[in-house]
Image (cartoon, rainbow, N blue to C red; front, side, top):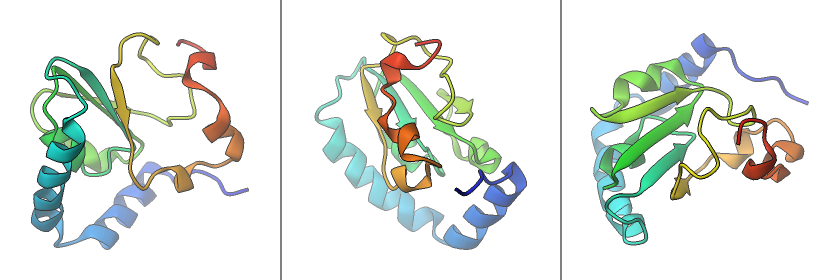
Length: 128
């Protein structure tokens, strides 16, 4: 089993992988966020699980926007009003079970450490 990356290692990995691509990725996510946003009410509370550089959560229209990720560098990428949850998503969340209307994730599940992390329903996590 692999172990989670340390925050500094995550920062370095993201910088290497996405260097020079911010504007391009943001343009793509502006379009994708409009597409996915058709199923999200304007007043909804939305969580971007594995927020990366916040391209989705910065562009989606929602009443309340949350972004969860372990990469500390992505905090600087969040637009004003996006609430950042800097944590492992497999750990109990600081959000109550009825506080979200939609959870979005992209290119994320392969980063979980175990299949059990994916299989455990949010409703069964402590704090939910």
